[in-house]
Amino acid sequence: MTGTDFHSMGAEAGSPRRAMIDSQLRTSGVNQPWVLAAVARVAREDFVPADHRAAAYMDRAVPLGGGRFLAAPLFHGTALAAAEPTTADKALVVTAGAGYLAELLRPLVGSLDVVDAADVGAGLAGGYSLIVVDGAAGELPEALTNALAEGGRIVTGLVQGNLTRLASGRKTAGIITFASVGDMGIPAITEFATPKRWSF
Image (tube, helix red, strand yellow):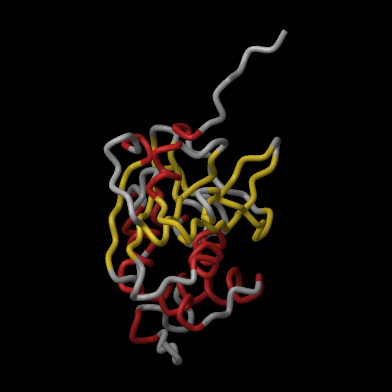
């Protein structure tokens, strides 16, 4: 996609969606036209409870209930850019309560599966060339990393001490090597918390 007609996508000048694009994404270096077109197309307010719709475009995570959140717009825009999706991708989105990221990604890949973080387990299909995790993980489940094909890419938030950062990785010789994309606030996924280990 080379052009961006924001008006036809519901992001006309003065709208909350357009303000989010101009004041949060562009000013933070998310300027790829195809990313901006994707976030202009999808209404974030459709993915939060009715009493939080007014906060859907603010620069913060929106609570969904049950300890889950819709991450801030900057996380979704930056994660989408880092994923570099193509129509050749067999993609998987791991969600933690909201389907917003999946809707951003769906038109940009060849096929898309969506799984809730609570349902990631041994029965997860494999062979994905792209996995995007909608939140921050203390530890990625083995079933998830096994589902990534050799040479495949994964984009996820990572919990590292008191910080969360966005990272992108690639699987080579069965091992995923991550590179930091940037530190930012990302809601932690409870199901992917680092297990407590005994120390003596």
